[in-house]
Image (cartoon, rainbow, N blue to C red; front, side):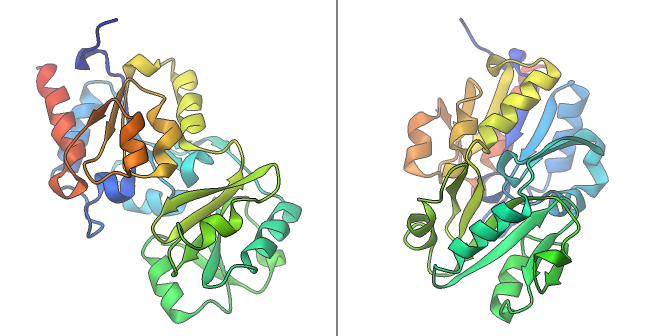
Amino acid sequence: MQHSFSQVRMIATDMDGTLLNSHDQMPKDFFNILDQVHQLGILFVIASGRPYPTLAIQFESCRDKLVFMAENGGCLVNGDKLVHQDILDTNALTYLLGRCRQVPGVVPILSGFKKAYLFDQTSDDAREEIGRYYKKIQYIHDLSDIDDPVSKVTVCDFKGAEANSFPALSDVKAPFKATLAGYHWTDLSFADTNKGRGLAMLQKEYGISPDETMIFGDYLNDYEMMKQGYFSYAMANAHPDLKAISNFETLSNDKDGVLYIIRQLIHSRQ
């Protein structure tokens, strides 16, 4: 089968290291490009490990033009409509937090639908770093303080996740798993939670095939998602393992590699 940009009906992009540059900044003309994509009838998906409340604030002015795949696929929201959410119950959270306490140098974050939750004893340095990504935070004494469904436990690891928390937590028992989500981040979630499953749910919901899907990513939490579309683009700065399974490569996040390709798509439709 021949493929062309004229087929594309869905674009999904990761945020950190992909759409955002190294200073966590959005491309200057992103919102203009989004308007053009929306006018073409293409569904635009923000696929991120970030929590939904943070994404909703960040894209408040254009939420009606976006679908959010938050928590690495654990929470799917279209506009104000909740499409799907994974929920970790108290027993699951107790087990996962217990495992986190066995790992030195890490801070667990509980990601809820309304906000994120940190324990009172979290250090000031950790609060500052975590606050870059979590815009709605409540500090708690214990789990009884939470009245909100929690999708995921994220570990902030100042020692480096790939060398510290990820190998230490990679043997969590079923039905859970650890995912390397960034240099400082390891995610703990249900074993079947990933961006690939989330994107497949959205494709089914809106009747869109992998041949009609364009995807951008840079890290291993994008791995399954890259397999859900023919037009899969690894960033120039992407992890080598992600480049190996992607069909294409684009410019780095610091050179606006996502918009570089999307502009070509828009031009091909004119």
